[in-house]
Length: 112
Length: 114
Image (spheres, each protein chain N blue to C red):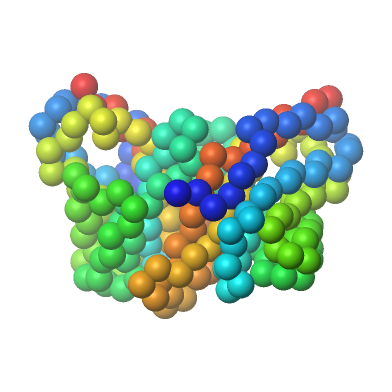
């Protein structure tokens, strides 16, 4: 079962910041939060991941609440090419192996 | 750039046929994965492998088997295809012995079983 809950869809205006929320209230202390996105007809693409601290890279920022029960992915200046399904994922350990538990994702539509 | 390739983008098979889906990666990654993706369900892990000739069941292995004879190649086998195996199949690879690192995905194979 998915360990994350996301809104099914969101809109954002081009050039504005896109803030994508994710709830993971049952996350355990050693489980990371990962974000991937999937543009139509392509395989998923890694964006960012984090454990407790906020993280930033060239694609996005990840803000994780202090209690770790939710997080927000921020695309600072959304472009039309950022239209995609965004997946918030918890990485769990099962039988000593890491696995990504995927939810249904948020379909983000960037509007001109 | 890391490249993960899958043998077909689209495949149509008949019920009962044996189906082979091939995946090749060129980054010398230890870990390889097979997922299926269905509308509204996200990705579900079928099998993964963290070394040559090693395999581990994921969440939904029933009806599938895998083969990893070489490090760069991971094959998914449907022994007797059924209509409920109509889906998008995605292959991924990652570095590291415990599969904890970023996964790189192929473009997917859309399989239709008639």
